[in-house]
Image 1 (spheres, rainbow, N blue to C red):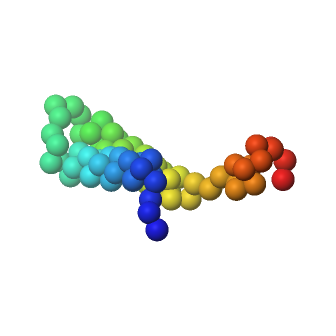
Image 2 (image 1 turned 30 degrees about the horizontal axis):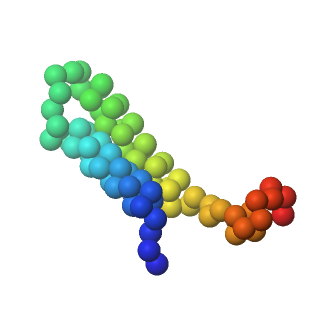
Image 3 (image 1 turned 60 degrees about the vertical axis):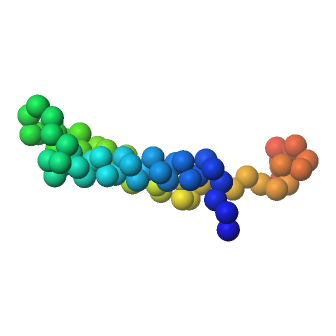
Length: 74
């Protein structure tokens, strides 16, 4: 099964965002801000990446009937 380029890109963005969030929370990427701000931003990035992965993974496929007939009703 070949993945669509859009899905590959979305999975890559989810992975990069997750890694960046983990790096911020663990301190590998250091910013001169309060620790609470750093932890909050890291957790938000981690949650956003999980959301992006799940939305991409469970995205419904378009209906074949609508694709070939251009009718909105099934």
